[in-house]
Length: 168
Image (cartoon, rainbow, N blue to C red; front, top):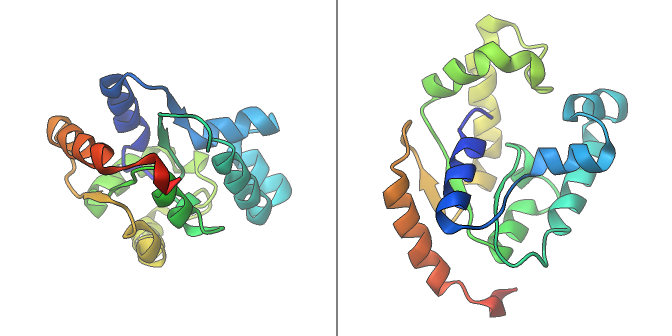
């Protein structure tokens, strides 16, 4: 959450001239409900099952960039599935950057909406610690606050050339 997946995803999709998808938006379109409403009405388990189903429905689309929610890699073997079917990037900016970005919008984040401001940093640190094993499976880790898009594009292009369809 707050790492810049959507912003960077749009930039990468434009650079590669491929479609951009936001997994949460795809879920909202399919369910005709917001992510927050799905969480509150049906619970996180239902959301995570839907998330995995929608993610896997993208399997036959030839080339695209997708931003997935921060929890997506952590459930239903999604991290391994994404890595097998595409090139994965973990955006890992400093905690201070995440707090700065998430503070003003936390009421729209189901996992942070009820967290008091004074516990936001501890909550984010705990979530990252719990998700580390999944995030660290990514092909590329970007830890800068301001991503050097040109360097990332070059790295992705090199990986894409080595990424063969036989891995599908």
